[in-house]
Length: 242
Ligand code: CA
Image 1: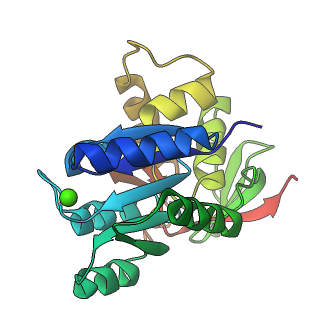
Image 2: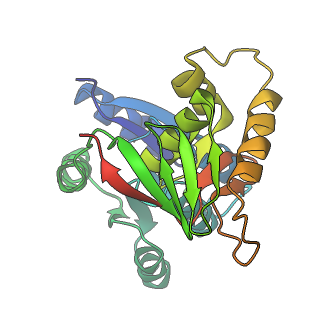
């Protein structure tokens, strides 16, 4: 099993280096970011398991990073690094979905204890694989590759379209990037590949997932700006393969 990957978002070079070194020495994979914009990009990545987030950051404020991160990855654990006395920010951070906080100056030992505790609370589970889904008044059978609507109409799905749907369903808590879809559905490394082909597949899939009765417009696939796609609120898994 790979070791957990932690992103440290901290603009103070000495603190960032100290935290990164302490975590590396403990066997974690660590990446650092010195401002909020880079921090959000690194934290949003699918292979990030935990984020240590300073609040006073250049380019994008830590609370704003947290707010945007929660839209892209609602469940990735976040520990806030806060200055003594900034209790308001700490409380706001916890309200916005941070998992814990550490008050500066902190010892490496204290930080590592918090990191371990938060990682223990959020064990990484393999994503579920679904064979059936519901979409508004429609039933999607991913094995037979068809959508059946309440009005009796049916439409066929391609193998790729079912692959995209299955991938979105098993990661429905977060947005997935076009690169991830290429890698996991097509099985190709997304280096230098034109990702517009994915947008075209998604557009065709959305057309097929339109309720033919015309009375209902279930939201199957959401576009997440500057990131990728996410299962919509009306697309729900119905049956699990394993
Ligand atoms: Ca700072």
